[in-house]
Length: 272
Image 1 (cartoon, rainbow, N blue to C red):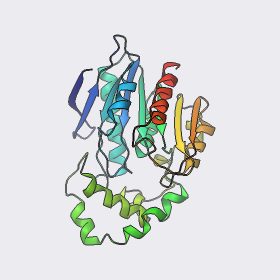
Image 2 (image 1 turned 90 degrees about the vertical axis):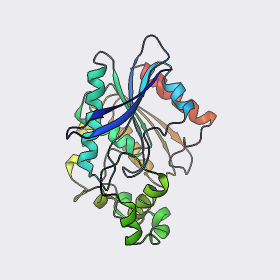
Image 3 (image 1 turned 30 degrees about the vertical axis):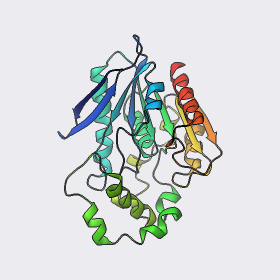
Image 4 (image 1 turned 45 degrees about the vertical axis):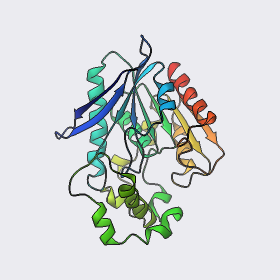
């Protein structure tokens, strides 16, 4: 398995680091562009456990890409970075199918790319296609109590004066915890109106989406399960795996169940 680290240039000249892991197959079936989760505020491009990478690279190149994080960069910049990643790999692999894969907020970016570019398929793990969602607009119960312990002084120490594409969990996660607990998430993304069409994929667009493989837990405390139901209902060629759990990122720890779902996702792509 060959692994290469490089950068692609954003539309405004910022260098976005990425890692591409080449498939073990002599006949690649395509390129999977992976966007990490973290509420667009925290997270690392290389957060996929090796077990999952082994499954994905059986037949596909996998690109672990980065994007600038909020609140140092706003939602428009983040979406543009996601599109720049797509454009870069389209130029590198013009003859191969391109797929986007994201977990949580990364799945939102995977779908935003599909809105603006030609994508052959999507893997959506516990994501969402819109931000005008009641639970995104009010304090999140699991974060609310802890968020009151983060003072403005602490917050100002954590927020950087320059753009960044990754950061230590202990310095980035408290920002997310604060903004979700205090119902300030969209404001920290630079979104003035939750109903703005640029940040919500319309139903008529979803109806024309490429084939989409969806996984979500029914009791997800972070992203409502209903958001995946919404996508599945509208995307004509979609497969929805429901897990009766109260987890958000069910695949954080590798298990036989999580590996089976990754294998199913690959089988879904193989059939496109």
